[in-house]
Length: 199
Ligand SMILES: NC(=O)c1ccc[n+]([C@@H]2O[C@H](COP(=O)([O-])OP(=O)(O)OC[C@H]3O[C@@H](n4cnc5c(N)ncnc54)[C@H](OP(=O)(O)O)[C@@H]3O)[C@@H](O)[C@H]2O)c1
Image 1 (spheres, rainbow, N blue to C red):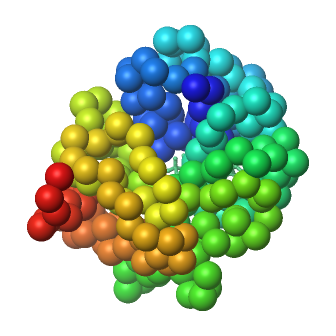
Image 2 (image 1 turned 90 degrees about the vertical axis):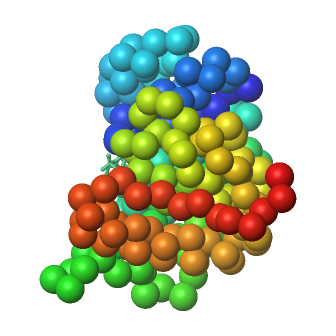
C-alpha cells in the first residue's frame, strides 16, 4: 500500500515514516512543501521511500498521514484536498498553546481533525497524538495508540485502540497538552497505556 506522510521531513513524520519503512509492508512517500527536502529525507530513510511535494505525494496514495506542523495543518489540508480526493487521511496534529503557566489545549470548540474533515473530501481519522516522535524512532513504542474514527497501523507494542468518533479527537488533541506538560516537568517522553482491555 502506498502511504504518503505529509510533513515527513519533520520530527514526527520522519520517525513515523521510518517505522513504516522498517515494517516493510508499505511504499512510503515523504511529502514536503519542497520536493527536494522530501527527497533528502526519503534517501536518508532508504527502503524504497521516495520524496515529493505534499500534493504529488497524495495523488495515488492509498492512505495519507498529515504530519505537518500543527499551525500549517488546516492550510495544508486545503491545499491537498483535490489531489487527495477520497483517500483517508490520518491527522496527528494537536493545536496546543504554550504559555507561562504551561501548555494548554486549543480553545476552539472543534478539534483540528474535525476542522480538517470540513475541508477534505475523504474520511479523516485522528490519532497517535500521545506518541512522542522520540519514542517512535527505534523499537515499537511501549504504549498504546489511540485513534478516533478508524483503524491503526502496527506502530506500537501496545494496542491500537478505537477511541470513538472523530469528535473524540477534541480530547485526544487536548491530551497532548497534558503530556507535553508531563514531559517538561519530568524531562521524559511520556506515553499512554489504557488498562482494563481484553485483547
Ligand atoms: N513531535 C512529536 O513528538 C509529536 C508527537 C505527536 C504528534 N505530533 C504532531 O505531528 C505534527 C508534526 O510535529 P513535528 O514535531 O514533527 O513538527 P515539525 O518538525 O516542526 O514540522 C513538521 C514539518 O511540517 C512542515 N511545516 C512546517 N511549517 C509548516 C507550515 N506552516 N505549513 C505546512 N507545513 C509546514 C515542515 O515540512 P517542510 O518544510 O518540508 O514542508 C516540517 O518538516 C504536529 O502536528 C504535531 O502536533 C508531534
